[in-house]
Amino acid sequence: MPMEIIKKTNEYSIVKKRSGRFGVRSKNRTWVGGDDKLKILVDEGMIKLPKAKPKPAATEDEAAASE
Image (cartoon, rainbow, N blue to C red):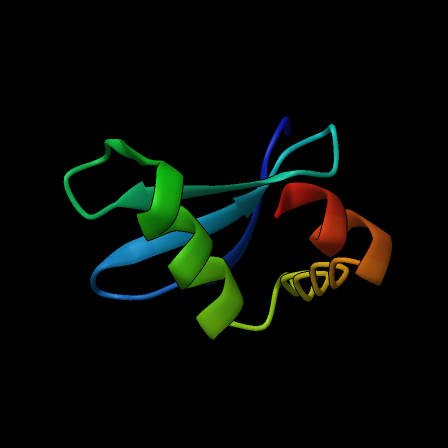
């Protein structure tokens, strides 16, 4: 079997592909992608989002050079 069904709800099914990645199919059997897929997988605890790195503050030399 190429895909293993991980979780099935009334709205969608989460499957694990042979590559180890997750897929989400809606109840009308179309694949869900993009932000919708990401939200479903995060809500179900399948994946974790990386935290955004803080932007480094401008140093005094760079601030003085821009003036």
